[in-house]
Length: 435
Image (cartoon, rainbow, N blue to C red; front, side, top):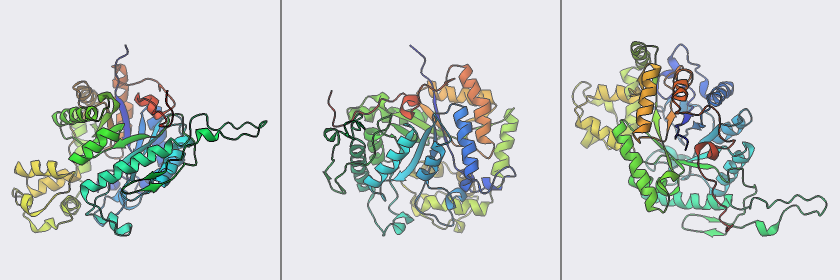
């Protein structure tokens, strides 16, 4: 029996995952709309044998938004273009179920899956109901738990549409003149609480059956939705203990929905800082952190507190009053609550929010050791790399990945041409076919 190996994906965020990375001397300030650069990144990730590239997204912006989100490509369009310049790496994009239509999305991702030969993945997100997204979609509002009911029905419809055609439905026999077998075309005829969709979808299934489903919900409703529906889960833990608990919880929840615990893969987000020495890694961290002013840090941090004005509070006193005065967003509530209860000052909170210190920091061997420790402790099935600074992706791919390969923890060749094949996930059976 072969040794279980780590899965790796990279979250490509143009000018970076902070408010200040674009200011670094080595950064390209137009990176978020520079397709040539995205092509280079995709090819590098594929050369390093990563499982997937991941494109995050959001549906509204403010003056406090990260620079990357102010001016960026739409995910499905970008991934469709990248499909043409790659061959094996997965292509995962974020689209909201709250402000989309199942038929349109099924066509978009079905097309991406077919174009790429079975490498598409959909990161299902449910947009916030108290933020500005609704203002861009006819002021459509929906309460928190209801948006997961909507998402569940949305995904049920989408998966149904992806089963519109059996694998051998298109005969394409020139002699007989038979283009398709009508018995193998299936109409959905869905009528539910939120959607009424007839179908069928106007594109056949890909070699992987249907796109891989990613999800990143952290609330109770979000965790249940992910455990029931997702193939892979994107998490943002702060410690190995937190990540172990999250993965065990998600595996346990999956079993309550009649699934195997191994049916879902957990990908903690990591932002490694790699240096030839530990001192060099610290220098790289400080180099990035120094690009942020406290004024910008406060503006950015306010987005986690419903854009409350944080400049009115003392910077260097424990910020316990924020627990009562400022309600944090659902997904961020736990981390901010714990930090504030520990006595952290507002200055510390703001600077940590803008430039978090990664536990994956040090020499290539030290970072590889931490990756191995988390993986073997059951904290992760794989990792979602968020490059730290303009050097972060190259550092990890060229210095850490080879060490993981030497240890037998990461592949030395792709196992498959499809994303499901490389992730070790089964191909979903067409719902209309019985064995």
